[in-house]
Image (cartoon, rainbow, N blue to C red; front, side, top):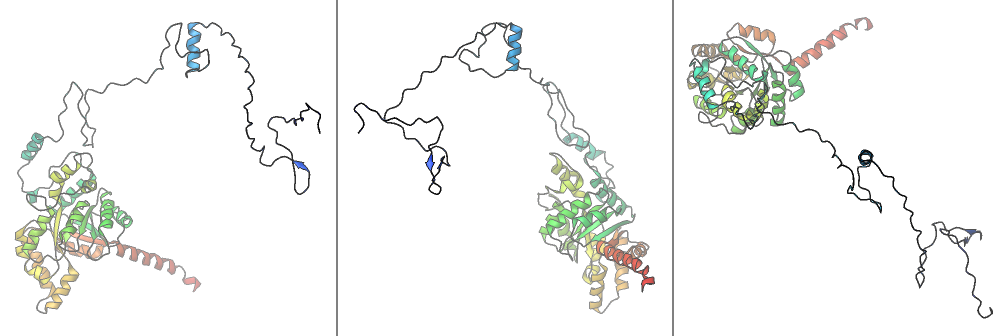
Length: 424
């Protein structure tokens, strides 16, 4: 037993030193792999050692200039025990210089090509663009030419090349100048863009005999209109109103309507292509202004007021009934041209067994000539379009995308194979 008053000696351990443990495998002492174990606090809290007083070194007396320089070097507030964020001596510190704010201009005008309205300054007044008085004076300044004979209708001054392509196409048709188009049957905006860039006056996006859906049609219309020289025209698959809405709201410059057989159908077609009060077209052309280069907050208004009435309406005659009723269809009016579908018309004539295709074609041509309406037709090639031109047709299809693709591919393959005759 230890003698009375003997206290056991406690092992001396350095701070942050883990106790040495015996390895159960080797028996050698080693440190704890995860650091020192958690120490339970003793029953009584040990007294903390008194902290050493901090010696405060006297700060040298700075001049006001030096104080300002020091404040710029250390912009943040100091939190030392003898520092204060408030300056006690010297001139007041200058705040950081901010970027000068330019005063708003007194007046601004819209740059050329923009329809955006800039608000006037506080002491000036800028007149609104497209004022009612200006439109009325512009409309009265026209030479009172009938709508069907106007070759350059008054439009907004902010119209790009897309609108000019429509005006150019309509003006040529009214003056009986031939306009050559391409028939687009491949449902692809890439093909449409390539074909529109070849110099055609117009391009017809066929939705009647192709798997082109409304979304693809809208993309193809935008691709053709983007050329600035080729007018996109859509042949709708039927007389249902939704097809007219989709095509016109996408920005089509014209509509070809298949199988028009009566004057009443022609009147209904015209009403679906015109806004009230002359028609019953629904208001929703939010994408159509883009196809005509219209921008700004007045784009839709400019389209409705200046562009929509110039959309080409072209009924297609492709049946014996339509050919027989053509004089009454022409009297109904509202069309910009008559388009002949030769393949369906030929099939309809053969099914009748009592007339010849040549007689029907002569009747169509003479009726259009008597009513002074331009005449168009689908031609399978450029040579066929030339022969139709000599017969009085001016709205002519000179090529189709699928025919150009297939004929060019076959021609290039034949030329390549002709050079391999020495290897046979």
